[in-house]
Length: 416
Image (cartoon, rainbow, N blue to C red):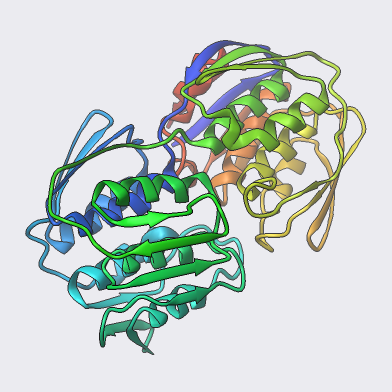
């Protein structure tokens, strides 16, 4: 399958943002701790969600989906391992480790797969779980974990790792005493996980700040939770309008979650209004280059929004500089953008984009999730037809992207 986009057409329409991928995955893992039924609303239809459903099913949970609601009954969970084939399908599979350990006291996993964006070691995850009482061995590519004794402790994260923070929160939810997670990640998805755990009766506070405290507890009961909107998807839709020009309304958003992206678009010359969960954006032909963009942990500029912003900046007048501080292989989409006529130079973690160059449609391939989104954003601002392959990457984080772009007024379709 390919995504065909006829570019050079202004966008005009409205679209709703689906639930956040980076929120629903750890919450699905956390459903193990409910030992009962979790009803999760606003659950996006993504291949990464499908993998999580397959993992939960293997573990012995009962899972069914109805529209954007997923029902998970973890009462009969009877496995504490995850097969290598499932672990390799997505990077976030490692977040199940803390939940399985907390529920069963043991776990056997292999290293996770996902987009190849450079080294993303799970050492910090393992360090955090050891503090909480886990004995961990790495033998023949397997991570073999057993709990000597669940106990709260102080976890000092050397960097604000999202995954390590989530794993620590999940295991600490069953640990007696108090756990303190210092230098915790502050992303909105961390707050959403905290909100879910609080519904389980866990005494957890501080998400959204650098210090999270957990008083392990919990009880069996039915839990109902609605996933927050996906801030990266919302950013991508807004950047699509900046690339193609036009005006659009983006619904089901939380503007403060992607305020840094909104600020950049305003600086470029877009008119943006927000009211409640709606964002209205209008972008003319003459957008200008913006200050250097340096990715960093939340609340800084998100690394996941860097590729689609780079694609939009190809139409900005002037030179835009990007400094990627999170992933060392985050510029894999640059070669494909050059096929469309982009003027981009890279040196290590720095990329320099000379904008206002006419882009033309081309056959390109997505090699990772956000790089694939960048190709779609660039194609919307290019003249002629683009054909994007590698849709398996895009489908990990965007629900029916071609449908969403069509609702914005784009000429986009998925074809053989």
